[in-house]
Length: 364
Image 1 (cartoon, rainbow, N blue to C red):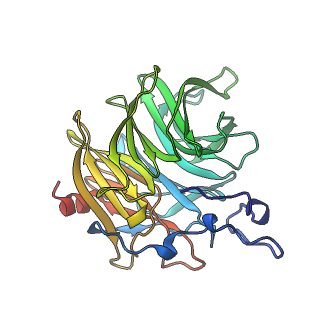
Image 2: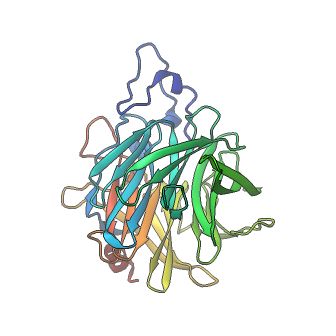
């Protein structure tokens, strides 16, 4: 969902705690959480296994998008990275415990790809769309797989009016960044390293959808890109360099999706690949099997309260990873919760759901 920051940016700080200063204008309604009008989702109920602490920003719409990485040599090791779009990035372990906070910028969506070559050896490339750093459209970070420490690399300019959604992709040895703006414009860029160690972005193509997009996710193995247009549905493109011709594979509003269409993620489960989309309008998640030529819709689930973890409402970003992910033997799904009822100050956080719970709920 589009948040109007211009009326509040001068009135709030961007540290761990944002304070509304006396005498500043009241934040625009679009900057506030939507959950006052949200109820527990209408999808088949599943429970969360754990949750992260609330992000530092209170009162305003803040937490947005997560991403997951596990060490391919030891899948008990890994991190969840989540955005506070008023303040910075959080790094959590695979149980949701906070490990690190990297302040700076206004990062909205985050994604990662491992094996990025650097002079210090391969690193996990982490990218976030960013509206807070002057002259930049995206912020790049490097995660050291040995220490699990996330380090800011560089802010890079993007030719978009207002950078918003973002995802990364691999096409052979090429690392790609797909970033979109609130006006529907989409840029596909190749990310590499200059001799001086700074990043270099090379635009491969640009295209657009008619209205505001946000969530996107790439299927590297099949060369596909999925893009969410918030009020219309989910598009599928190729990951090539030629003219982009999209196919609307799921329409919104529909029985599958209630606008806004928000986060998109993919999960590999054996030979099967599943696409999960946040249906923010009714606090649910739609699931399709997408390893074939035609998406096969499998149903919807919602996360309900259980064991001291509150329900997920008004959800935004979502990330998933199949196979063993820490203590989750078949996969993990992480999603933003618009109101963390266990915290104070109307804060937001991320919930962790065992993929087996989703499989049982939808009969996958």
